[in-house]
Length: 260
Image (cartoon, rainbow, N blue to C red):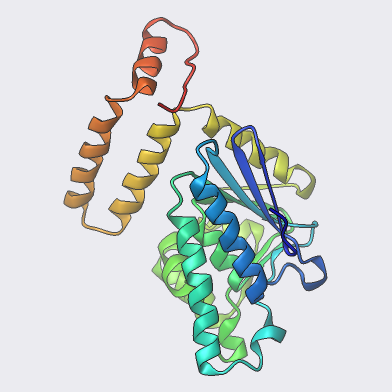
């Protein structure tokens, strides 16, 4: 499928979704959000994709935010519809069965920071910048930032970033837990791909059920979360991957998982 503002590819069980509006620093306008949503639909339907990478084109910007030019003259109804479209798309990303890694290769501001937070975890280049500058424009974060950012970095750090609209660098993002690792710009995608391939080498059913259990548990009390973990743990014993993984361990060989 061809897109105007997104580059999508699949290779060896890994899907890469690249926002591609370099002249606008990969800012999200309605068309781009629609294309991103369509990419997620392709991933949802695929039986072969095991890991997803989300990134931006070039070496300056991941996603510099929502497109301010496109939003500046929106009515309240238009603004709500745009926010809802982006929220729904980011929630689909968050709820994908496959792990999703954000490769943050530059500015991740506003909608870009919100997109990164919708992914399972984030690796950043050393020139990356993060922030929620919306209050400086007279609006709140609208693509999930008031909810996901404090859940990722903690209530105090999230509130400070949103209330002050301060932009932080990659090292600060690492310090507060917004990103897992920081790499030189030239090495970022190579390092992200290493992790993606490592995940893809594991039992895909177990990985996806682990994600489901984590996500479920973070949104409920611990007793309910542990009960759900017990269910997915039991399901694993009905899979060929469990037999292969444990058999390979006993036989001291490398497992060959099939996702069954």
